[in-house]
Image 1 (cartoon, one colour):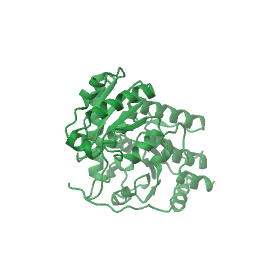
Image 2: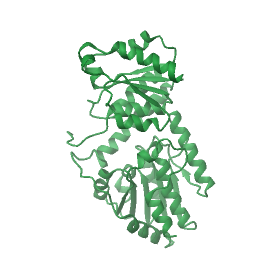
Image 3: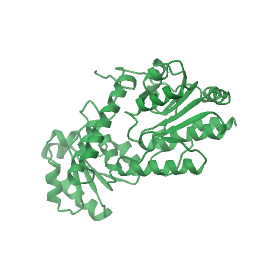
Image 4: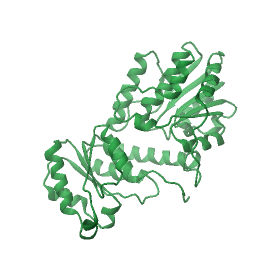
Length: 354
């Protein structure tokens, strides 16, 4: 499909993957403005993001020397345990050799070269381009690389079938009024009918999405609700650490849930959640995070309330029959650099109705 709306960048995906691999310093070899917003946001998560600031002169004559200088400076200034040099459209077009620059810099810090640009149709190319040299460096196992590639393909398929990539253009929408959806959810929870509340969140977004489940439990602690969460101990280092923190905080605040998948398995977790829906036969479902991962065949005939952070995910969710769709605006920036749950707007509305 040819999209006529902006799509996620493979360069940005490479940056986030470097962070998940516990890279301390990432160096973007390109213009100073490339991926500016995400570079600044990722510094909130503790990863330094530098740039070689290529300009007109380097576009013509190359920026290899500048890259070597920045690599050396990064090692001297920040004493990192791991570094990554990440390509951009400019460095790839002019044919910069990132690996040779790393070698010529003389640094001793383990450093990977990520040959990537933003011209790929899918952002997962940036993830894979980062994971492969990481596996060669021994930062992850060969088995984990294969697992990650499988998960990425599964997540992409979900987006093409029922997500923001399912149409050439989707108008953004803020979803339903939160107090209307919260009233409906609490009415169902207090009815005594069986319900399911499932967290199926992507990585650090779970710090806020998990709060929705906690708010429901705070409001209706004795309701007939089965809670699930994709917080199993698998994945890249940061992903596993985030899952453990969220599990522990939910338990300390009185919510015990059944673990169902890991934080990087959100794209392939739909059938597993669907099987639990089929077995329990609930009257209603609260699906939080990546709700469109669950095929609609499992939610047909069930009141389905879903929470997403994507304004362009509202229409696809309504198309597959979700009666209420809530959008947590600006969720992702609010969950970068955190180590404990962040209250969601929907959760705050639910708590206001206790």
